[in-house]
Length: 171
View 1 (cartoon, rainbow, N blue to C red):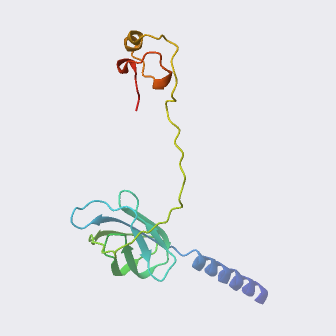
View 2: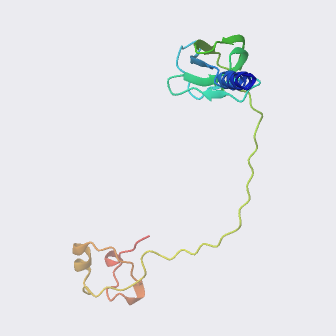
View 3: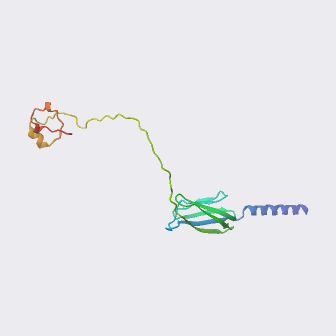
């Protein structure tokens, strides 16, 4: 009989411990918007202080944190370009969802002056002329040069026609 009582008490203790380990947790949801424009803010960091829990808002400004032990918490909302906001006394109840609506104030960022310096090694560039001097085999007459309107860089000393009107130069 005593052995049966000890077994029942043991089973009861194990059951209560398991129930304590499986205690219900709470959920925190909400939306973060810009104070003046009421636009949804994405990428806002939502942190439950003194815990390892947190989230970031999605592209519609929503956040969702599950598995929060019941209790009272302090939350912090922060984003670049906005004033950090702390909210105290946020109550999380077991098996329930706590919803918040948060508005952040835009903040002008003041940055120090930045000086950018750079060094560059000297480089030697060799440019090849795009049109090499040549003499054409089209014809020795000036009229044929002009009729074809071919731009050819020619060496004046190698052209049979000595008239300056028939010499075509490219620059």
